[in-house]
Image 1: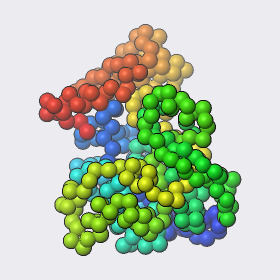
Image 2: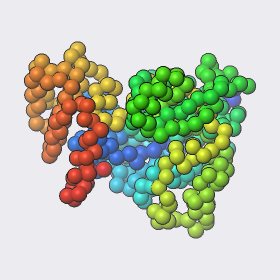
Image 3: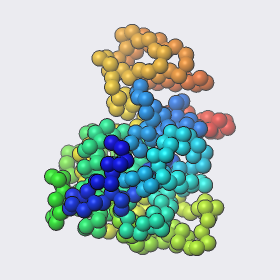
Image 4: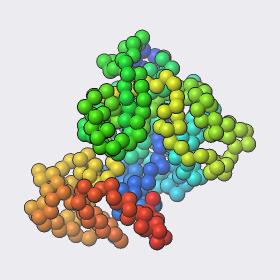
Length: 368
């Protein structure tokens, strides 16, 4: 839909709400595990993967068109990626916030919160990431509207939870408590108090979380009143908020802020946390295996793009940006060729690609 439809969006209590919603898209990810396609000048959020004609950040902006109008969309990113971001999203994002140096997600979110407060002190703030894949957009909007309602009417800090499908050791987990009473209709979605957050667990712990069924994956999508957020951040993150609130604060001083994630620095310390289990499909495109799982596969289970020939090959990811790749008799492999690099590995070694990035960085050829 076009942005013109956004003004008619109503929250679940019947009040026109979209003009008071601001969405913040965090765009500082580096994507080292998607090397060699993801590199310093073009990290993964700016890539079109799996044969798609849209990049991940373009998809992220598109699915937020009915959540907030253009002037209420914010992109937080580093200076080296401002040019490519503007080229890809054009005028569909109204505000670009440039971090002079990456300081993890808590400073990035607070940078946006202070800017939004100046523009609209009564805003509800939605924080999402630029490198997630969410194809069921209507369900995504519906889940977000429920979370916005909870943040607005019950003064909660809301996190969206993803129902785990396997015992992942790569995600944080949210422990759900009791179901919240709802003074407003939530359109059939349940909302829960949050008992605790757990950082990336070992396999046995992740397996026990999966069996207990009251644990969600933490996908890092948050919704809250900007006023309530800054009030609580003053309590739990004074080392950041005090400096940012100072009239003499400059972006040069931003480099002096502590590196802390919004999950650890805020969510694990704050009170009044609630969770809305997501009613949409979700993939974190973090490894080449997740590319295979997220995009349309051929009958043999392959995701292939570029100049590729396959014979007796299955469950593999094959991508070429130039040279012909011929994969014969391969199974569960990742083969990626760019103009200057080639990656070949079993899909199971996806987490180890970052070691290539470390090796390149040591020799002075830095992918991000």
